[in-house]
Length: 138
View 1: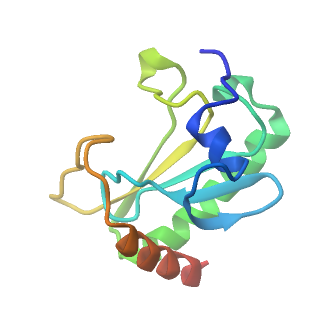
View 2: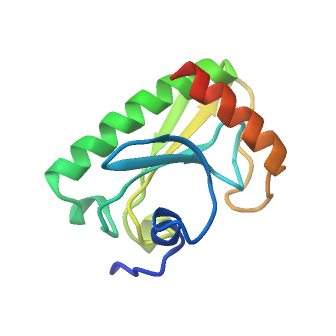
View 3: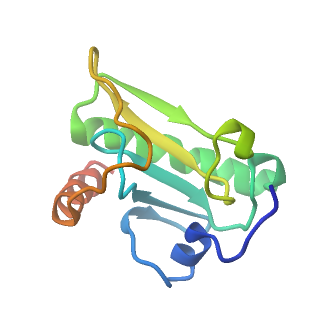
Protein backbone atom coordinates (compact mmCIF):
# COMPACT_ATOMS: atom_id res chain seq x y z
CA UNK A 1 0.00 0.00 0.00
CA UNK A 2 1.53 3.28 -1.06
CA UNK A 3 0.85 6.62 0.57
CA UNK A 4 -1.81 8.72 -1.12
CA UNK A 5 -1.52 12.39 -0.04
CA UNK A 6 -5.22 12.83 -0.91
CA UNK A 7 -6.40 10.19 1.58
CA UNK A 8 -9.10 11.27 4.01
CA UNK A 9 -6.73 11.47 7.01
CA UNK A 10 -4.17 13.57 5.13
CA UNK A 11 -7.02 15.91 4.18
CA UNK A 12 -8.15 16.09 7.82
CA UNK A 13 -4.57 16.87 8.90
CA UNK A 14 -4.43 19.71 6.35
CA UNK A 15 -7.74 21.10 7.59
CA UNK A 16 -9.55 20.33 4.32
CA UNK A 17 -12.06 18.03 6.04
CA UNK A 18 -13.61 18.41 9.48
CA UNK A 19 -13.19 16.08 12.44
CA UNK A 20 -14.24 15.97 16.07
CA UNK A 21 -10.85 16.44 17.75
CA UNK A 22 -10.13 15.15 21.22
CA UNK A 23 -6.35 15.69 21.33
CA UNK A 24 -3.59 17.22 19.22
CA UNK A 25 0.09 17.90 19.67
CA UNK A 26 2.98 18.66 17.31
CA UNK A 27 3.27 15.05 16.12
CA UNK A 28 -0.21 13.49 16.44
CA UNK A 29 -3.95 14.01 16.16
CA UNK A 30 -6.78 12.07 17.84
CA UNK A 31 -10.42 12.39 16.83
CA UNK A 32 -13.70 10.50 17.08
CA UNK A 33 -14.60 8.07 14.31
CA UNK A 34 -17.69 9.40 12.51
CA UNK A 35 -18.86 5.82 11.92
CA UNK A 36 -18.05 4.33 15.31
CA UNK A 37 -18.13 0.64 16.09
CA UNK A 38 -18.76 1.50 19.74
CA UNK A 39 -19.30 4.61 21.85
CA UNK A 40 -15.98 6.43 22.16
CA UNK A 41 -14.36 4.87 19.05
CA UNK A 42 -11.36 7.14 18.60
CA UNK A 43 -8.65 7.29 15.93
CA UNK A 44 -5.06 8.33 16.62
CA UNK A 45 -2.72 9.16 13.78
CA UNK A 46 0.71 10.63 13.29
CA UNK A 47 1.06 13.84 11.35
CA UNK A 48 3.96 12.29 9.47
CA UNK A 49 2.77 10.89 6.13
CA UNK A 50 3.11 7.10 6.20
CA UNK A 51 0.82 4.44 4.79
CA UNK A 52 1.62 1.75 7.39
CA UNK A 53 3.38 1.37 10.70
CA UNK A 54 6.33 -0.11 8.82
CA UNK A 55 6.71 3.14 6.84
CA UNK A 56 6.66 5.36 9.93
CA UNK A 57 9.83 6.83 11.43
CA UNK A 58 10.78 5.55 14.90
CA UNK A 59 10.17 9.02 16.33
CA UNK A 60 6.67 9.31 14.86
CA UNK A 61 5.87 5.73 15.91
CA UNK A 62 6.87 6.52 19.50
CA UNK A 63 4.83 9.74 19.54
CA UNK A 64 1.79 7.97 18.10
CA UNK A 65 1.80 5.12 20.62
CA UNK A 66 2.30 7.61 23.47
CA UNK A 67 -0.71 9.60 22.28
CA UNK A 68 -2.70 6.38 21.84
CA UNK A 69 -1.98 5.42 25.45
CA UNK A 70 -2.85 8.88 26.78
CA UNK A 71 -6.08 9.19 24.81
CA UNK A 72 -7.11 5.58 25.53
CA UNK A 73 -7.00 6.27 29.26
CA UNK A 74 -9.23 9.32 28.81
CA UNK A 75 -11.66 7.48 26.51
CA UNK A 76 -12.00 4.63 29.02
CA UNK A 77 -12.78 7.06 31.83
CA UNK A 78 -15.16 9.18 29.73
CA UNK A 79 -17.34 6.26 28.63
CA UNK A 80 -16.86 4.00 31.65
CA UNK A 81 -15.56 1.12 29.54
CA UNK A 82 -14.66 -2.19 31.17
CA UNK A 83 -11.84 -2.67 28.68
CA UNK A 84 -10.26 -1.36 25.50
CA UNK A 85 -9.47 -2.89 22.16
CA UNK A 86 -6.55 -1.09 20.49
CA UNK A 87 -6.11 -2.09 16.85
CA UNK A 88 -3.89 -1.06 13.97
CA UNK A 89 -3.99 -2.52 10.44
CA UNK A 90 -1.19 -2.59 7.87
CA UNK A 91 -2.19 -3.07 4.24
CA UNK A 92 -5.46 -3.88 2.51
CA UNK A 93 -5.04 -7.61 3.16
CA UNK A 94 -5.01 -6.83 6.90
CA UNK A 95 -8.17 -4.69 6.68
CA UNK A 96 -6.61 -1.23 6.34
CA UNK A 97 -8.98 1.03 4.39
CA UNK A 98 -7.20 4.41 4.65
CA UNK A 99 -3.54 4.53 3.53
CA UNK A 100 -2.39 6.60 6.51
CA UNK A 101 -1.18 4.73 9.59
CA UNK A 102 -3.65 5.02 12.47
CA UNK A 103 -4.70 3.32 15.68
CA UNK A 104 -8.28 2.54 16.67
CA UNK A 105 -9.28 2.88 20.32
CA UNK A 106 -12.45 0.85 20.87
CA UNK A 107 -14.04 0.86 24.31
CA UNK A 108 -15.47 -2.55 25.26
CA UNK A 109 -18.05 -3.90 27.69
CA UNK A 110 -18.65 -7.53 28.57
CA UNK A 111 -21.43 -9.00 26.41
CA UNK A 112 -21.62 -6.01 24.02
CA UNK A 113 -20.82 -6.60 20.37
CA UNK A 114 -19.05 -4.12 18.11
CA UNK A 115 -21.05 -2.53 15.30
CA UNK A 116 -19.94 -3.25 11.74
CA UNK A 117 -17.02 -1.14 10.53
CA UNK A 118 -17.88 2.02 8.56
CA UNK A 119 -21.59 1.29 8.29
CA UNK A 120 -23.55 3.74 10.45
CA UNK A 121 -22.80 7.44 10.78
CA UNK A 122 -23.00 8.89 14.29
CA UNK A 123 -25.01 11.96 15.26
CA UNK A 124 -22.53 14.90 15.03
CA UNK A 125 -24.02 16.61 18.10
CA UNK A 126 -23.56 13.44 20.15
CA UNK A 127 -19.95 13.17 18.97
CA UNK A 128 -19.28 16.74 20.11
CA UNK A 129 -20.72 16.00 23.55
CA UNK A 130 -18.65 12.84 23.80
CA UNK A 131 -15.52 14.74 22.74
CA UNK A 132 -16.09 17.18 25.60
CA UNK A 133 -16.17 14.27 28.07
CA UNK A 134 -12.97 12.77 26.66
CA UNK A 135 -11.18 16.13 26.68
CA UNK A 136 -12.25 16.66 30.30
CA UNK A 137 -10.76 13.24 31.18
CA UNK A 138 -7.40 14.16 29.65
